[in-house]
Length: 369
Ligand code: F6R
Image (cartoon, rainbow, N blue to C red; front, side, top):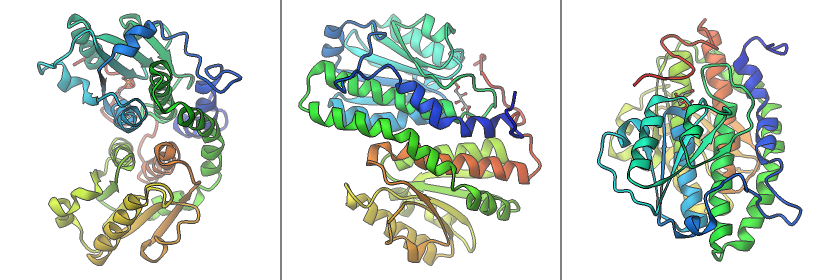
């Protein structure tokens, strides 16, 4: 059942290229346009939506944070992303023009379910992004877009996460398509790029041995920090979450721009800091900023673990360890940049003698508040 792997988590990490491809399958027609007939929310309702609110927990919340960048860029509809457990205890401003997107692998997470009930009571439409057919969250939503990751057994979410990002992007692009925004050509180009991502993830998986070695060499450490900017920021949060839950290490993700506002005080000699570097192509200002962040922390003694695109030479002088990922458009980078962080956490957990598939104190689906 583990298909020759020691852990379900390893098997599920390896299944990611297929999970991503399966989630796109049948949803793009021959002309390169999206076919999401399964979203039964009428086109006029989607056209009139004036706000999108994403609610989710844990790793699914990180997928939502990434989606915000894409949704706002492609649809120009304001988008908020909120932890389901916080959303439901505020007094959120929602009405029939609000589209709520509830992301959940299991479809049974109590906080997310309560958040969507709360949203529907205020008249909002709820679209679920879910990996489990017929589970409670899609049953109680107005519509559902299923991720096709297949069953995820390991408690730590990996392949479901990548497919949640894909599904969110499909929703964002579909909204752009239905609303006929000026992004028409861009949308087609992104759909083509999305179709390439599965192959890029495959290539990342082929080069993970140095990441495993690095993880083993850090098994005695107490703390690892993660930095990112733009969509790399949620990737940093996800890297830190994986390390906490699997390796039981203190780990934190920060927006690199926040360093000077506090976190840089944490930097000390030989502290491992993982930095997710945006592409030097496209929005190069982001790239330049993060290169200076790497210099700043390294000057203060940090051991820098740099995740950067192939061909990005600017980071080389400042990287104590360099992890290469294939070049992708900026918004799609999280799907390749997260993979080494999953492998890193899994290997650290193994090196520390932890139970990879069943971390202590955690359950696969959190059906209590
Ligand atoms: C982390 C992890 C959890 C889940 C969270 C939401 O690896 O698996 O943080 O992402 O409990 O679960 P779902 O997506 O089932 O609602």
